[in-house]
Length: 358
Image (cartoon, rainbow, N blue to C red; front, side, top):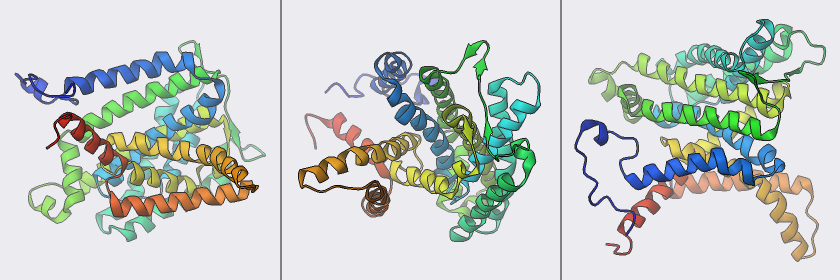
């Protein structure tokens, strides 16, 4: 009975178009953000930051970009790992080649170059769609893997083929400890999530959804498919590129092209499918699920094997992860195609009717 809209009247266009029209939702989101910035650094240990929270924040940002392209515009992409790689390597080159380059500007520059690459490989979407578009974007993955492995300029001609960054700082604030890295990534995620939420509610967001639902009908009513599709590729690639820069600079510190292999592209696509396509909240659910599930299986399976007197190897745990991921994707596609975000929405609707369901 505490989660009701009764008495919450909208008296202006501004209040009617709020992101969270129900006051309880607004207070809940503000409380979660305040807890993430203040409470989590005080309560969580270093392992949680390194193994769970920092990867979750960065992958949630990348899933946000993938969701804009796949969930809101309906353009299947298997090149997300390539766009992350472009963002990471171009942010690195911008950072080390330009004297005094600020860290945030370098990361945004990586996103800009990822935008250019994403728009280039998004050109086939003007003619093909579905499986054919997925194959076209897969070409981006193979091409970028080859380029960053064979062209020495991208790695600043290092002998090992890997690159590394250190002594990160923003306006005198050093980013060395796990808490500082967590807060830095959290700031990026909050800003980009707010921008993405407003963007999908705007005119261009409605154009993306019209193209997703029926591109021929959208063209008939005056929506330009070329502008809508390429803008979705541009915005998506920019966000994914920034996430790639954060993954390399903040989470890894030192990386090589294998860090952004095709497995990363599939992982991001799985996040969107499990979390919920066409939902900003679904990006967070999917990222949390993908990050937490392997850690849970690594702890749960040996314990379960110990109960029955079996020793489960690391290889068996790894194979079990793939089987569980595959089974869950099939289950969600059959039972709930809109993913965890839809289950969350159904739960909220039932809560609004409680304790008098009807």
